[in-house]
Length: 522
Image 1 (cartoon, rainbow, N blue to C red):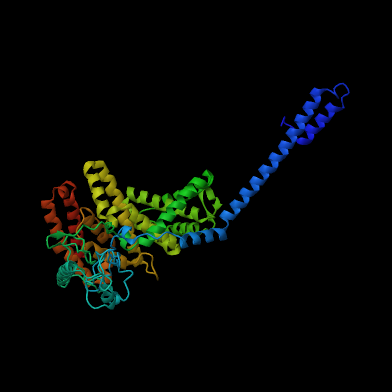
Image 2 (cartoon, helix red, strand yellow):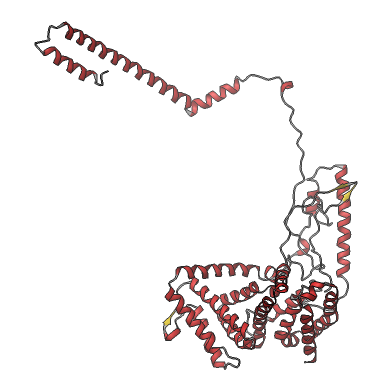
């Protein structure tokens, strides 16, 4: 096409024709004819390609139109070729699986209640326990008699002769185990706490949740497969009584870290110096009532986001929740460090922090959960306690530091509850009944190396007198139980267990015995 359109080619050709020198030249006439033929062929080719494009576009629209596509699919389905049924592959038979009823722990009845069961809490008892149907975890056959739901669930599974024998054998073994458990718990004990009868102190009660049929029962030479469900969480005070508060502690610490990373150094230094000044100046062995009130009032107003007079008499106030949570962490850390260096300051520090907790309930939650998270012996988590003991046995200096920290945390936690009984108020954040429940939990579970004698010793030192005046005869039963059963069991374990002797458990047992003797004499 010479790179020109038809009009441009015609114009250039006309210019050649007008020239007088070449108007009648054969060469020019031949060139004009070639240009005209080329122009006509270009026009014809353009029309042909335009018609082809329009045809393809119309075909594409017709092919992919929703209505046409549905009609084509319908025509194909109606005109489909029939196939001989003998040539079709045989479908595999479907086997109905038993429906899973529940995989959550079963509720605990009143008869088999125990302080050691993580699924039950004295603080939040389960309502209408007797009306809740009980099922096994992975089969729909009931283990316990009496509920309509269990009878209807029975019809959901397909009856197979061999499966029936397995179910009968399992039900028999499970009912026998329940009878043995109830028979063991019906034995008389010498300690009554909150009108409930705990189990023996020398044996850790088993979970009241019935075992699933995957505990390797041997029936007719066959063994059921082992259950792969995750193991239950370790029992601890934080898991049983403070589970929701521990979630709040995590948010408090996250806010404190966020404030520390975002705030300016001037603001943080002012808060630190103001808190440190109040902690060091007013914390004395024999602080006056005015000094304790002044310090507690400063912290209460500070954590309530009110104006306070801080370091160098500079007036300031906290303006956001993150700064309040940051100040809480500083108060607890400074007082714990001070108590770790000098244990004689326990009474003064407990009085200050208890007064602040009564005015600021969020600080009370943070204080109790923070202490539980800092002490494995206080939390009574068996796995954490074993890790602490293993670290102490390898390094003597580490043992001194760890025990100083554990003693500071336990004395502060128990001292706060003791202050609650000395200054009783309505809805106290640290009621003495919580200490009584902790005693019951400790005695109803298997002893933990070092943790059990140590925590009981610190508890009785701080709250023994208050427990005697509150619970009277029950407290006498508790002390006799520790003296006659727990201490002999600890001493017997000391003779057999080399790890107990290596960890120095004899000193902790001796301290517990002397504390019990002093409490009985008083």
